[in-house]
Amino acid sequence: MAAVVAPAHVNSVVALGEGAPQDAEPAQQEQALPPPRGVTVLKRGWLHKLSYRGKGWKKRYVEVTDDCELRYGRLREGGSAGEMDLKGIISLDDCDSNEVPNLRVDGHEGRFLHTFQVSSTRSCSVKHSQWWIFRDYYFAAVDSDELSSWLEVIQHIRLTAEVEFIDAPDPFSPPSGGLLGGSFSFIDRGDFVPLSRQLLISTHSNMAQATRKLAEGVQTIIRTLTEGPPPAPHGKGGRPGGSVWMLGSRYDVGPESPRGGSYGGASAVQRAFRMDLQSRLWFTYRVGFKPIAPSRLTSDTGWGCMLRSGQMMVAQALLHHYLRRDWRLCRDRPPPRKYVEVLRWFADEPEAIFGIHRVAQAGMLCDRQVGQWFGPDTVCRVLRSLWHNAYTDSSAGPCQTAGYLLAEDRCIYRDRAEEAASTRPAYPGQGTRMAGARQPCSWRSLVVMVPMRLGVGSRIFADYIPKLVQYLRFPQSLGFVGGRPRHSYYFVAVRGHNAYYLDPHVSQPYQPLARNISIASFHSASADKMPLSSIDPSLALGFYCDDKTDFDDLCRRIANVAVGDSSPILTVADKAPDYLMDDGMDDEIEAMEEDGC
Image (tube, rainbow, N blue to C red; front, side, top):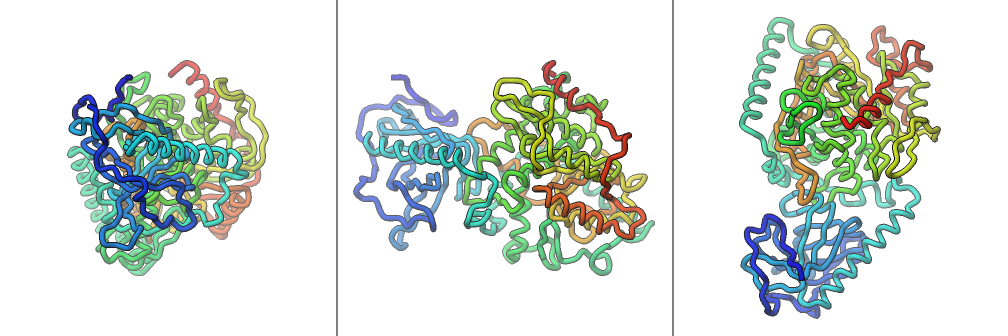
């Protein structure tokens, strides 16, 4: 029988010898654990679990529940009967499980002969506040009968989940228990310390970031001395108000900054703000991915910040679309299946539909060579074209369920919005090419991108700042991309005259989305801030409308802001002028993909 080797991080391999399993808990000694509220435990008992680095086995109490989860931990000593310290949760609705007849682990020869593997796309370590995708877990049972019973219940619950998923009438409707399913909880910063420690940031990147912040601080001081203090649209004396608005959600954090202060004394609202922030996808410079054809570049450090900022805004739109705005990345729950799918669409791989390779290559159609910096208008056009061509062999991508509108002239034209929301590219099926014709459909969700320039020179006109703040308060807001010349950020929140942003200027190693992947490097533990008066006037606003009613509400809010304003930032009109013609980028990108670029 062929030997099966433990994960690659097991130091050395020694053949298993004969012998009885040790420290195995008899099935008849199982203790009754109270199931989570509203959840039925299908099987529970003692197993041994191989540690992540493959150095040893740990005795764990395991239970499989009818909500397609495998939970493991250890029983508390001295507590009431049935209490368990939860160590981790494995999602079973899309896992693979099978027996591993000859698992060899150094130093444990002959100890466990009846082992099985669970390969899950989504899991989490509650103890270490880590989320994993495509991780392999190994468990050992006391005998072959016990092993078979565990595999049987795992495979049964997975089959049940597949049937329920296929028969679901509306996958986007909220469950009866609420969008968060009762699992929402606030997170203290201490829970995210292991997450922040995982971020691999080079010394060079830290020095560059510190130098940039120093230069921005000096420039702000010079402007204050020569031109006076920056405008304060809210609050008194130029001080920011007590509320922070993040992607249309309001947090009354009080007089203290939501980023600073003592975390031990942070309020529930401040913790909720940080939890919201830490749930946003964060894309940064990466080093060591495959070369971007036709160049030989294997890193986007120094030139890809606008591409990464655009990726973050589109990724946020997709999280809105599939998981809804109030979804949170909870430390005690594995990430949802759609989260993993969205993350893979932005992988640093040539075949990823929104990956850095395709974004950089599509920029060539806008006279931007691979390695050149993009502007907000260019990245919006490129992402629109990639959206319309977002197909893979196994998935039709987001363009089948949501439209993408590029609003030009700082005006949202209703006829163009209706066209984007009510037509979609034809998709003939798996393994065939996308048809050029567009098919009519009912009004879908709509992503609206509005590139604009709010002034001349290197700063926004002061009169535009309070108007910009109002747009960021809209419930449809996706924030905006922009920042400083040649330094782009993704702005997700505003408080007074300060804007909070996710910074892509951090060089991290290329991380293939293969197996045993921690998603910590795709989420930022904090945000930086910048005065709105210091932002470059070239930027791009983003909005997400869930349906036609939501789009009509967006238009109404834009019209209300523009009432009595001789120079509004945004306007709404019924019909687009004739000079706004289709630029034909979609067809060119499709031809470029045919040529294998």
